[in-house]
Length: 180
Image (cartoon, rainbow, N blue to C red; front, side):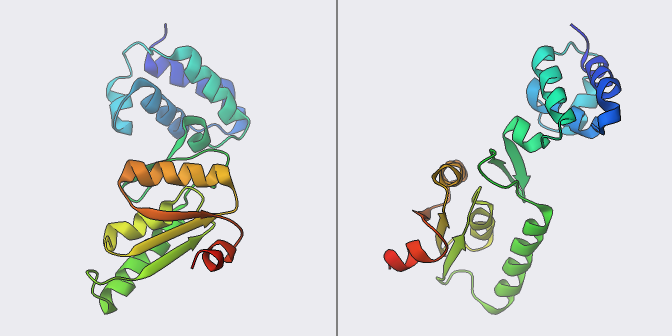
């Protein structure tokens, strides 16, 4: 078995023409080898890669333009590591900025101990209610999605993060109107 460093170099050389980044390869190695931080991969570069075959198969998927988050099944959002699948969009940095801005601006005018209702339409992974809960744990959070599979991903994230969210399956505002 090659070392972690050798495997990353091999995959990078093999798929460099397909724009597979060394950063994404290090991230795959981090997840597969059970490291907590990307820097751990650099410190462990001389250790044997235990999941070499899996790593190379995932590197090939990267070369076919599959996002690394879909390959490993998780994505970072604010301080959370959320489950993702092809049934949901990958949480974006712009969404983190939006949630942070809303939390900051609303926090300037509203006592976070008070109660408000927030509905996330098209919740996907559920990242927005989870991010809002960080700043406003007393708020009633509602989430809907037209996709049952997307809603299952969101529910899994809500449970993992300990965030209580009422969920509805349906299109746009329809589930909220039907469940007043």
